[in-house]
Length: 252
Image: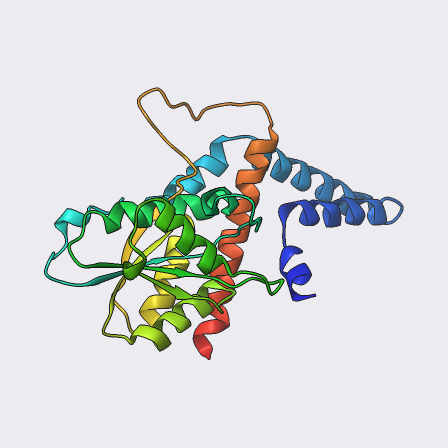
């Protein structure tokens, strides 16, 4: 039930409410109905074209630069926490294939950092909501498939949210551990805030960047597209979750 409730806040549902509101106002207040139609149409156009969504995502993702592990103190031990992001369990497939694209991107970044440090520990986390093999376990197996020794991997198999992952890390390793967070660039600000609130000085290892502005990149006028709407929805969810944490979680 909670998973269903958490899935409700999306731009798609917001626009459904907008349409219902417009229809409800159709035979009531003409001026307000026109206002709802115009503002909703403009907002829909902004969300389905690339310029504004890409601009917002770029501003979010540039908060933390790509980590250069060789610039870190190699005499320290580092715990690289690869945050969970979903998987589809199928024991007939390699663990790497079971991970979702976002989880795989986070694991790749964690292993990249792992291989450039002298004293690394890879930490995998996240539960299974169906009571099956946990995502932490599947990610651990995937890391081993990519050449990481099992002796250098630790698991946190019970967390279901980013906050719980950080709390489980604290319970297991204490606040003296130097943690490197491997997660999406868009997700990094919230993850860093959570670890800071728990008493850490975390190091960001962002990955899975949604916008790539190379020499030939273009972000001008474009036709409406589902890809742009998906990006806008991701912005909406990211800002909503971070805002929820800042307003409610930090008060506890």
